Amino acid sequence: MTGIIQILLSGVSQGILADYLVVAGGGGAGSAFGGGGGAGGYRTSVGTSGGGASAESSLKFAIATAYTVTVGAGGSGGVYGGATNGSNSVLSTITSIGGGYGGGGAAGNSGGSGGGAGSYGGAPTFAAAAGTANQGYAGGQNTGSANYGPGGGGGAGGIGGTGTTTVNGAGGAGVSSSITGSSVGRAGGGGSAGGVGFINTPGTASDGGGAGGTNGSAGTAGTPNTGGGGGAGSYNSGWASGAAGGSGIVIIKIPSTHYASFSSGVTFTTTSVAGYNIYSVTATSTASETVTFF
Image 1: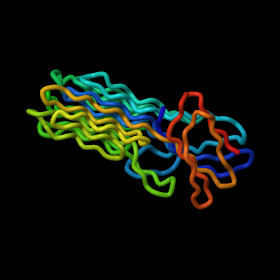
Image 2: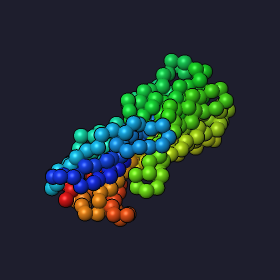
Image 3: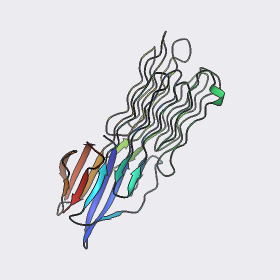
Image 4: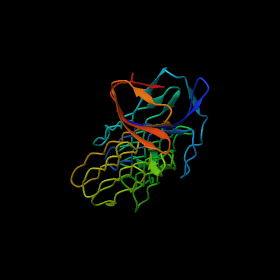
């Protein structure tokens, strides 16, 4: 499984005070004038740019105590329907909710950020899906005209774009964080898609979200380790598949006087920057993996 968590740690008496960024896996997208997948939920205790979630309180970790760490996978894409939500990411008491899938000929699904509304057939009744408070925004609404303008997936930094009779909805903006020393945008929503004979331009996406397809091509998957939503598949004598959401990541930043130890099912890399050890976790193989601080 995969998703996103970032942590800034400084030593305190009988423990370590931790800042964090936790992003879940992005939602997949469908086709049949499909909406884009919603981005994974985004929680953090540090400031961000791009209109994202408000900073929350830091966490305090005891030394030599194991804490749960789970990185949520991106949801799968599908033809027509069949897409799924992304998986949750967890750090101790912090849970980010997986992104909602984009509607393949139907309404999107709620999640960390909501999936965009499809527009096939009954477009006026297909509602955009809600995001989760302080984690992400709603998906975009369709234009209300059957087979035209599905909505983009919601992002951690903005609502998914509303489709029109000439434009497929773009994915909602993600959020940028400089907790590792450089600004990185993550958790953007996926773009929607129409097809040949209708609106044959892909709904755009950014910050790890995948663009919608065009000319009967599949949508673009959310970028791995960003929690971006998947792009919807397009039409040309048949429906191409919507794409999967992006997996997330866990980044842990602690003073160089401390270090982190992980259970065997955790995949990570380590770097050192200006007195800090930084652990970038890209996958956890089960929901029972742990991190322990020393």
